[in-house]
Length: 528
Image 1 (tube, rainbow, N blue to C red):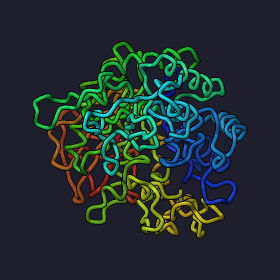
Image 2: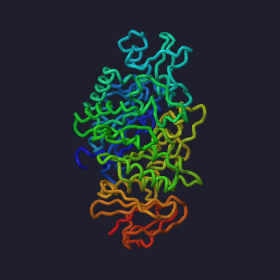
Image 3: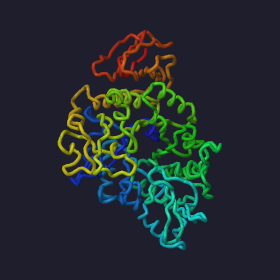
Image 4: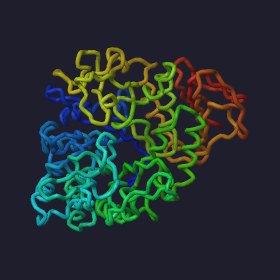
């Protein structure tokens, strides 16, 4: 892997620390637990998963109203996860295993318990007042404008502070007041936070809610639906945010070999690609969430990939993921007809063979499904508990995640769906992921090669070529449960099947006139 571009060719594994591994038995995952499981993630033996970097969701000091995304102390570890010494040890242990570490940066908002906001709220004359977005009510006492919280249950993105009579802005929960990024002191403070973690040795940041920074300083109403104003929004995706990201990039470029990936939660790829900058001067990577939202149709994924590829600037590099802490797991989301596990295998091959950087959410490699959460155990305001259940390491009561009572119930079926049960089973989901990851690492075509979709394939088939010089691979994915055959112009008569998602399928020399796929099968074929 070339120096400076590891983030292009590596596989990044997303860890939700509350649910990955509990090192002290209190039922909540922590940094020590992650350290204890690093050997599972490394890539030196065939028994390991083989990822290159981990992205850890927030572990900073927090009241945990939004489970870490309401930060009350950016430069410290919340006691539930450990201490700074534990994080330093995690960095050292990861580095010893060749694993890079990316951490979350939450710049759009803080906790309402952060010292900055407590000072800002204390008086309209506070030196920190302008660090947040405050505004007077309308003459009738209503909020300053029509902006809404991202959480539907919350409603308006404004809360009234009774003491001062002003409203403060919160794009998410009322306990998450938005910072005022037009204040240079805020920009300087966040730059210092980035430097704090970069100096400790982190390899980069996943930047939360990038598109929410830099609200319209005039606080204008968003146009009403059907007003003919197109996609104009005054509460997000403002052109001014790009100057802020260029400042972030300058800080990152002051260090050796660091990166940033942005949560640009916009479903229009044409708007997402602008966050790469005009000359590789903003984000290194920007999540393409429209890909994650596609239905289980080959045509939909082919169109999504094709559109993103066509829009990317020449200097930009795509990134793909199919699940994360905010979205249903793949095997559950695509389980129509009970085919979730078979489809998850095809999805794994797609994710790990497309051009770009794959992000893999913990547990996807064993086919974890959403957990059923009893009403008395629900903790998340936005209904995201099912995809955040504890990692399933073994068949014990606590699934090997904890010796105590887990903070969320372990998903049903963990007795069969766990790392220990799948480790030595060559037909398991875990074995498929290990083979795919190992193969990808050794393939110039998959790491660096061009992407070219195969035209005129049957409905339900997504097929494409990956080519690096003379190294050509055909990836063919059957999104249906029925066998299918197709001929493609320009393919040789024979090839070598290297991998298949169908455990019973033998590899070796295979006829390509026609290409034959069984139901719910994906295959990689090396072309002469």
